[in-house]
Image (tube, rainbow, N blue to C red; front, side, top):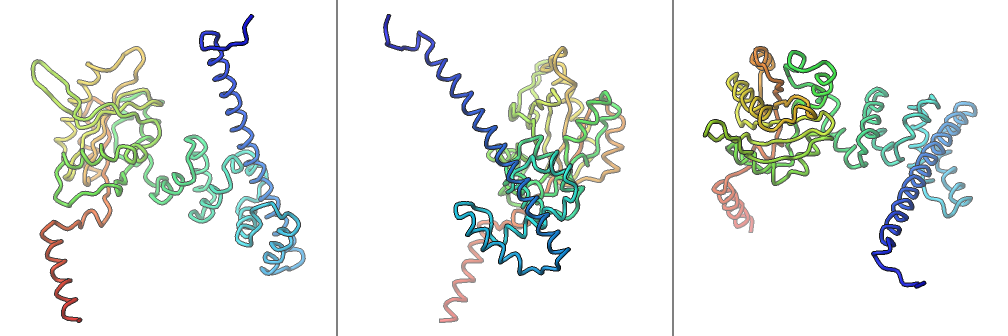
Length: 344
């Protein structure tokens, strides 16, 4: 018998398995602590509210309570006046303990402060809570989704999904699309071409996937499709893991015109025939992403199309839209230099 361990004995796999179990337990423990903390903060906030209502205490009680709690629990963080005010507001906007227990407390305290700061209605808060839980959003991603008005953009793109997809997939696919898409992370001049937009999106693929939403996996750029000896190249190709289907994306730097729907119908038909696994994949869908669109024109254009297609617009930041050319920058610097010399 030997005490020597090596990879052939299975020790590495044994150690790997233990590490995974420990890490999983640590995550569960951290989440449990987080949930307990949120519930504790709600209870503290409720007590503050009740005492103020019953005894008529004013806002100054927060400052005194903060000092006393810090003395009583010197190693405990979270008892600043600002955080106690958050606790009070937290209990005020969520008076039902059952809702707090079942849904609200599933998110960490940092997420709760974002929801309190940036949203006014319980309905919108619940919607973002459910989305954050479902997709595992970090605090920063939650902030980004709220600031870019995801709730108002989700499921707003004109589509023909009801006519071209089974009802269950139709509803889900419709909710996956947004309108407009926020592409403020791009740096483009206002006279940029479609290929410039495509390259910029690929260069910023992580931000673009975040904006597309959970479930999108990038397959290829200018994906080659050969038909009867002719070559075709749809701009971007994705696969959606939840919808279990290919998504063809066509980029347009101009306003939507009906002819775009016919071209997308062709691309989707080819991907259906060449790439789709009929046994495992759902029908391919197309998304035409344009500078702007007329919803009525888009709806009429899609009404006679046999393949599932959506049309959405995108938004660039004002700074991008008004980006200066090299000549304009040189002229601007020259004017500044003249102004500085005149001031001296």
